[in-house]
Image (cartoon, rainbow, N blue to C red; front, side, top):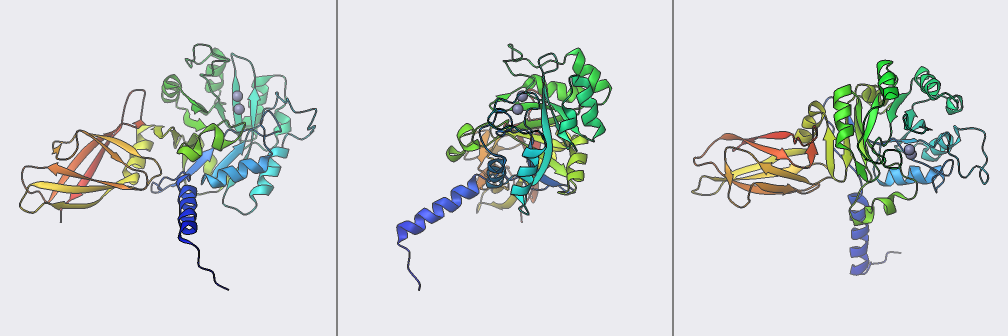
Length: 367
Ligand SMILES: [Zn+2]
Ligand SMILES: [Zn+2]
């Protein structure tokens, strides 16, 4: 039996479909790599989170993530009397079983949770989280590394541990760096961002990471229904295998994505911008030397661009916005009819160092 849906039902259906699509975090691949969307720091009831691990998996799939690591605290277990568990690998095992054959890679991880000066560090790609429960924190990090872990310093700007919010390496971190036991740093965690952590990453060759550190629900914490998104790390990997993801992280091929901002090394971020923003049409107006150029955005974040080209614009000031998954047409006054030209923009919602916006050259061919 067929039923014709009333038109308001169709409108509702289309609205639901588009909002489900809009929440997906997507960036195009950057040859020769796949662009994987990863959240490498999150909690469940197995430490101080409020949800079972399967909720983390379902949230991640709704957000279009490719990779998650469930990283419950090793030392801080406020639910241990209600949920006693002897095996620290259980949250990972439950999450892995929940993901099943759906397109999400689940990595085993733990948050090594200490007072300052060490603070909190995540160890991911561990083989056995139980063997990281050690009184000596450096021994725990050595054990994680011996299991092949990728280790990063969490929220170095956290005011509960660092009241100034100014991230700074302590001697214990410098010793870890010298021994090759520390490989990355969160420059964004939950709602906070740290220019100082970015400077540390660039100076000490650490992977640049953004993570949700979610304890409650992603939708509530990051206002996803209102257009927000969780902080994630874009990982440029040769494939979706765990070994390829680990290799990419160890090689520092990452970009942090936080509050619609992209933060990364120039050599990683500039190719991502070039893959995201492309010229899809160009034509001179009849009898004029004003060329209409359409710039398309293949990513799920809007870009704010400042024109620093040799040419001025006819219908914009120096600022243009290219909407997420959309396009903008700008009119460029070239003074004469050209068969090709280059437009140059500063990407204002991208950072390659504190206060430094990358430049994006766009080649335009006019048929
Ligand atoms: Zn922490
Ligand atoms: Zn945490």
